[in-house]
Image (cartoon, rainbow, N blue to C red; front, side, top):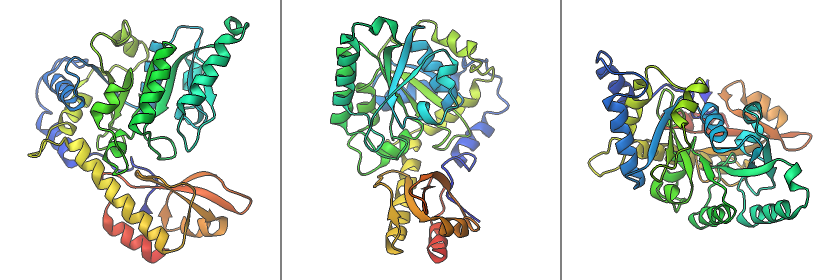
Length: 347
C-alpha cells in the first residue's frame, strides 16, 4: 500500500526524535518553564524577526484554534472566515462549542478577499439592527488554505489593512505554514507573515513534529489577557511542556546556511509534490485546482477511485459530479520519492 492520505501519517523527523531522546532523562520544570521551551521561543522569535513576540505551545490544531479564537472574542462576537475555512468545515463545531458563531464569507480557491471582507463589514455595521446580531470580532484565515492555495504578500497586507480599519484582529491558522513558505510560488517569509497579522500559529503536527503548534502574537504584550490561564482552562496546558518545547527547539535549529530545519524539511514535501503533479499530468489526470503546495486535488471517475484505493491511500474531498469525485493526495516532510515512482506504475 502507498500512503498519500495526509501529511501526518508518519511520526516525527529523526532530528526531533533524537532531541527528545537526548533530553529524556533531564529533570525539567513543568508547564513550559524549562530551558528547551525558552530556547524554542527565542529561535522562533529570531526566525520571524520579532524579538518581543509572545510565543505559546499547544498540542493540536483544533485545540489551538478554539483556544485562540475564544480568547480574542467577546461573548457576543463571532469569527469571520472563508466559507471553506477549517473552522467552518472540519472542526466539528469546536468554535461554536465555545459559544462563538462562525461567520462564513464567499471565497475563491479558499482565499478570503479584502474587498469581500470590506463590503461585508460595511453592510453589517450600517445595518440599523446590527446590535441585535452576532458582531464580527475577528477574521480567521489559513495559509495555505484548505485547497492548498496561498495568499500573496499584497493580498495578505490588504486583508490586514481592512481588519485594522475595523479594529478586528487577523488570525492565521498555520497548520501547514512550512509548506506554504517553502513553495516556490510563495512571495512571503515567516517575517512577512508575522508583519501582516495579529496572531498566527506555526504548525508542527503536519510538519515534522509528533504533535504541537506554536502560537505567536508578533508584537510585545499583544497576547490576550490571561492567555496562559485560558490555555489551561481549555485543557490545553501540558504538565510536561517539554514535549512541545523540545520538538520546536529541534525544528527551529538552523543549519550551516542559517535555515531552520522546519523550512528545509518543508521544502522536501514541495519537491515531492511537484514530482507527483508531473506524474498526474503525464498520465492525463485532471486537477480540481492548481495548487502550489503539498496538497494535490485530482478528479477521479468513481470506479477508477475505488480500484485505485485498493493500492493507494488518499483523502476523499468532495463530489465533482454524479460520476466523478475530487480526492486529495498529500506529500510530507517524510515522503519517499520511490513511492511516487511506484504510483506512476500503478496509474
